[in-house]
Image (cartoon, rainbow, N blue to C red; front, side):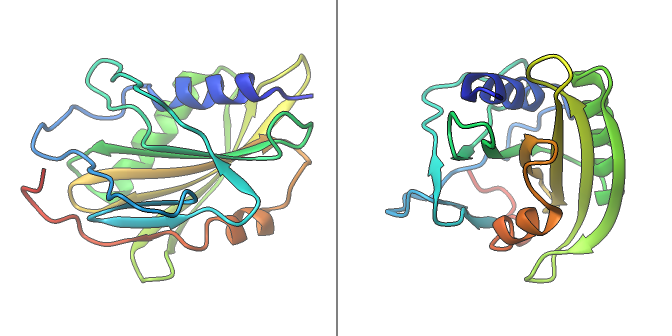
Length: 193
C-alpha cells in the first residue's frame, strides 16, 4: 500500500529539484477562491475533479532558488490506489522545448531508475502548447513502481508543471486526461507581482 506521507514526500522532493535560475520579477500569486478544488492565478486555471481533496501545504519554504509547489490535490488518501495532482510553478526563461528537456533532467536527477516512457507535444483545451509526459519512477514499498504523467507548459514567464502521480496499474491514461482536462494557461502578464 502506498502511504499518503510517502507520496506527498516524493512529490514535494521532486518538486524542489532545481529547474531554472530564479527571476525575481515573476512569482505566482494565487487568486482567492471559494472553490477548494481550484487553483487560479493571472496566467492559469485548474480545477480538480469532484472526489479529490486539496491538501494544505502550509508555509512550505523555498528550496534554494526554487519556489515551493502552489497546490496539491489527493484522491483516495491513505488507500492503496491513492493518487496526487501537484502544481509547480517556477520562473523560467527559454522555450517550451527547453523546458521539457529541463523537466526530463530534473525527474531523472530526483530519483534513480526514472524512465521517461513518452513525451508528446500537445495543446491544452484553450490552445496553449504543452508537453504531455508519461514517466515511470520507483517508489513506495520495495518493488512498487509509480506512474507519473506531467503536463508541462511555458507561459513566456514561468514553467508550469501539473503532475498526476499514483501507483503503477491503479489508473489509466484516460483517467489522467479526464482529471487534468480543466487546465488552461495563457501568456502570463509581464511585470506582475
